[in-house]
Length: 176
Length: 459
Image 1 (cartoon, rainbow over the protein chains, first blue to last red):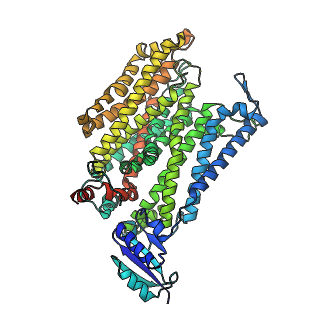
Image 2 (tube, each protein chain N blue to C red; image 1 turned 60 degrees about the vertical axis):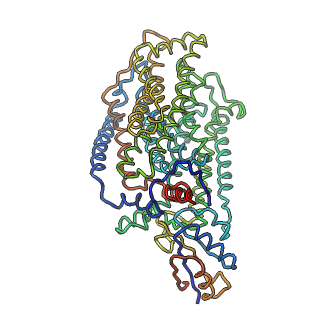
Image 3 (cartoon, rainbow over the protein chains, first blue to last red; image 1 turned 90 degrees about the vertical axis):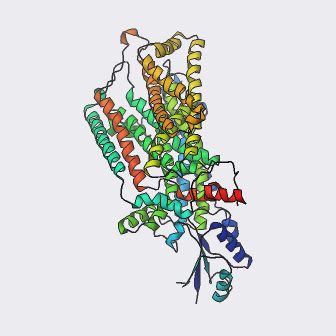
């Protein structure tokens, strides 16, 4: 029978110590649910740094390109205007006046692109059901999720290892 | 674990645990609305309705109902616009710039300051919209293909830069605010017992569960957003100032405008944050989270930016004389001694002289003095924009067209109305939203909480 362990801790430092101890025994921690970002837990349970920053940079450069392309088309190629004796002849001559919009549009694309990617990758979208195992994990409790599926140890051995950590509550469920 | 110097004042007072932070912030949302809140929202809604009525009357009749005339073609409309945009600068400054500088005190105030930013920018956006007169063609500011021989908008004009700046600023601030709100909505969702409230907060929380990977992404997104919002804050008010600075009107045509406007914006923004938070912390019993030290930090920002503004005023005067340009000199002599000298001296007193009182530690740490001075700054900054706009144009090159501006009841109604709408929005926020960034405050409890600091000191 596959089993899932939800081990609850009431302190972030205890959680980190427990996670380190379990990982040292070769146990894989599937996930951690916490009310706030617990600094230092990611390397312990093997969460890699996100690449959203790189994505944001790519979205922003797309914005830069689109803004310059658009302004070149509107102001220089399609309908060059002579405003106050300052005609629009080439992109490079007009560039200083195009900087503000280029900047704003890059920020617009970078910020929104990154946030949309963030929400999609998280699967956090309006109306999505919550998946935290206990409502207290958004308040003051920390839950570690360990499954037999991901570990070579038997349910009994896992339970024994978990009992050595100073947990607050333990719930064992059959894996669906 | 991270440690903090023992002599640094704690940011969270009292004997707080993680649970207490949740209780203190979510408790007021679950409980019945206090009577004071009901009275305030009734008053602000009435004012808001009056404002909406004034705007509808204006749109139905035309901007002739404002006191504008041939010479003074911009007045309260753009004054109010710049004033509101300026107020809208504190929120993102607090959450973005202070995040980059790792200032932990921001965590108690960023949520409500950002809310204030968003509401203030909405109020600001009303004015360029309605001052066009025909709001139904306001989409003409966008570069859309059209039937006028494909006549595009002018990308060389700061007025168009403003369209991009304000809309980017608004939408990015909104997203920044909401990304931070999602985990806190999840906290409320998991505490709510009434099914309808649970459902609503469930939808608002986007199914947030607080997984380690999600928090990892959350922190990266916050940091990158802060990084790109920081230059954004500075660009927005710089561009607003270029609406004036690139015009060839004596009094507007000055290169000092962008930094001067940005510091003015931060100055007025922080003053508005003080006004709102001093009421909110009392009303919602958040004295342990927003206390004297936070107020003092903000007052320091106010005195620094207020002094920058003061230096800018004096520089402008000096340069107008030093430039040797008659028109430029006249614009400034007229400013402080002409028919609008009263407005100039109100501005000088409120923005340059009274904030200097904050050099005294007693005043800087006094809540009553801060509240009064914050309102004084708000008044002063409104007059600054009024002085810049109206005194520069009311006497143009042709003395036969010299005139003065007299506001009509519609001018007043629209302005007061936006204050009403703003307060209605802010009060609704204070009632239904987590007013403190719960997830952020919990991360600093162990380093900056009073009880934890005491424990450390005793070790």
